[in-house]
Length: 372
Ligand SMILES: [Zn+2]
Ligand SMILES: [Zn+2]
Image (cartoon, rainbow, N blue to C red; front, top):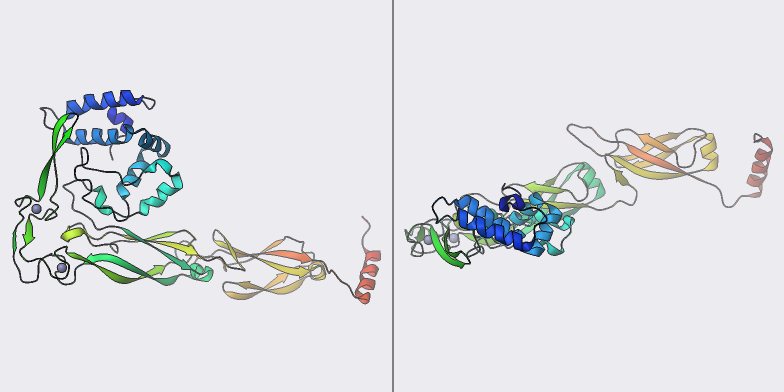
């Protein structure tokens, strides 16, 4: 990862926009790749740094979230991002998918899963298919013990007819007219430093240098087609609400046979709350109510747990709010069969109505209670 943008431009964090612009111009001229002693990589970094710091709004977001979070959010791209939209962009041909101006940190981290693996490309890198995301909701009990969920997705996958080759089966290929077989095209672009040339992946042949003479009749020569997929997702035991499962290579196929493999599938899991139980880390918590007589004399009760009903001995003299532990009926965690506990908090109820006999007995009891 490149250095902090301020370091790249050699300015302080409180530099004015004017100072940033000056520093950028000076460095851009110094490292311009067309010049002797130029440095393309450095020039690109300078351009990227200026693209952020030169825009007061982007600079503000950058200052807020820091270099790494900003870069990650930017490289994550957006759903539906076109990998070639950076065509003609400044310097490295990158464009930022996210306007971070109105987002808080949570939004930015949420956007990491935005897909668009193709966006992080420099032109030499093979294109990876896009990441996709899906959402599943499971019951409390299913989250505790694990389950399988099915995710239905409509995604761009390798064409079943040409298997990604883009050519009609049996047809031959020819040199790409757009790039003359180079796989990349050079764009000339006017900037305040004069004309800059930079190469990008050929949009016609996607870098292959060759095109099918007869494009595949099913996908029209794209190499991919949109189709419905039902994907089984194993939800591991003990998963928490809001967790994300990453399934590598289960996202979209790369464009036009691009060699870097499929994108990933991110499955966000929501856990439906239970009426009886709540989670406290690896423990499961519930409440039980007993009356004051049972609390005073002790009793046994049935406690519903995720393993079914469990007998629990309530000792004499149990107080309201006291908590008892049923070992091993909590949430599985770690490796092996380790589980948390079930915790029951006891509510002690006082009778609202008493029969005449009960009243007499309680009055009798009052006479016998210890003097305070
Ligand atoms: Zn095809
Ligand atoms: Zn081409």
